[in-house]
Image (tube, rainbow, N blue to C red; front, side, top):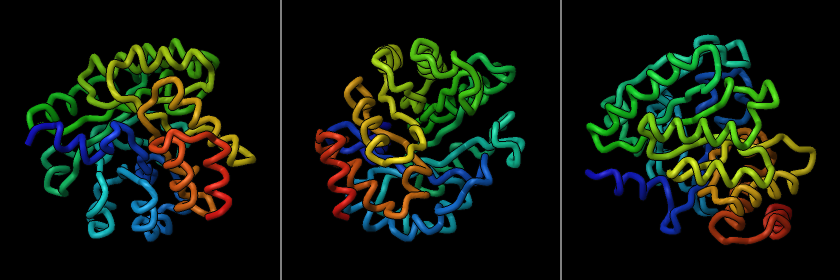
Length: 264
């Protein structure tokens, strides 16, 4: 099976994707809302959800829930799950394991500029190489200087762009990375030379601000989002997906998305 068939399960016909990140159990204790959100997946799929990022165990536990949506399996995990900074990661599953689960892709993180840079790159390269053997799309989550934004450079568009390109050079088919919210974010997309999904996004007091951030990401060339807590910890997760659909697949404004969310 060529990668194009599996990529079509991750991205819609317009080449864009609303991807829900449910893989938090591998690197965080802040997992409130994940299991409850999975119960709403049928409605989310109706509202435009294209794919999910999951753990190996989750893919087994909720196999029926993921039958009608693209699925990528997280192939790495934190070596310190109780440390929110994600001090290090290790490779976990093999591509063959993901294939047995019916996955459409795998994902791992890499940390350009961090102390563990070399090890994280090696993990990503190993997955990219093995994914190519099986025509499995590989998404590389490139996070300059580490998992969290810890210094000015880690949220600098030029630095993020360099990290994104490194993910491509390691063999990624899809890049997931930060966007700073600045005009310079267009360089991230240009440098990546691969479809780029904007990770997460800022936790804001008003969800309209989040929708404005997503609109910015799309305007500078992102192909969608890979978002977790802004959906799973919202009181109307299916409503957030419906709103994101307005922006990402409908090419609407942040204000139009907000009205969709309010009416949900």
